[in-house]
Image (tube, rainbow, N blue to C red; front, top):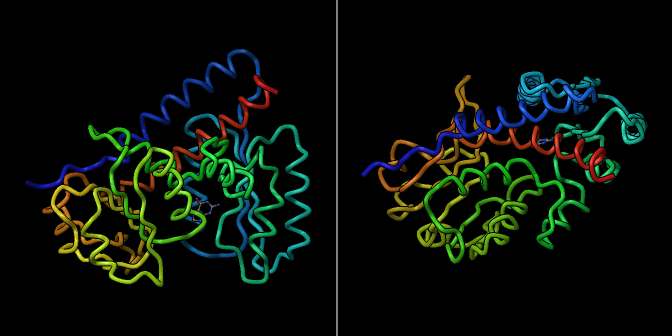
Length: 285
Ligand code: GUN
């Protein structure tokens, strides 16, 4: 049997519709809409596409976006000054600094400079710490989106063996925490992991977040595994995941396509986090 497809586009569209309706209610009351500031440094083509998609999604649901496109040689001091201003602006609810940043800038310092209450990416140590304690405030958008996909499936998560490939702060580590919060038994694999093949074979749920096409061989995937492909590999203007979709589909029970799987969910969860940042400010202080 062929795996069923987890349609991230469709689920993300329904989340966006709900957000749009909530924002319409807010503005009908005479309040300003939620507002997101996006900051992008440099000319990286992929980052420009991601930011453009985020801004378009904001427009679609009625979130105001304030976009800062800065040159690659912007100093860390200047960037910190901008973030400091945005932290103190009452008309801005969320701040997103697109990663990766140029190597002249210390990303960790920038992430820590964002007010955790405006950290709609969920990357600040405060927000990751809250997730680790299972009391999340803002959850990193990609793992959060993956959990929404998993929760739409007719499967119980507690006790499942989830294998996450990749230990980045953006996806792998928070993904591990999200799955742990749902009482999965989690194995986090990284560069130094030995016997990846044998670990992948044991997975009930497999999440690959490496960004390297073919890193997981389809033959390693056991029958009925739920396969989530977070990888994005641009090759000659085409986008591929980490996993060979056609062959993996013959083994998995459920699988995400690339594109159209996790990507749209990441954007939808960013919108949700921005709405929550707004609501927390105005309804619960
Ligand atoms: N770079 C890759 N993914 C992301 C993301 O979710 N947020 C930000 N800010 N940068 C990224």
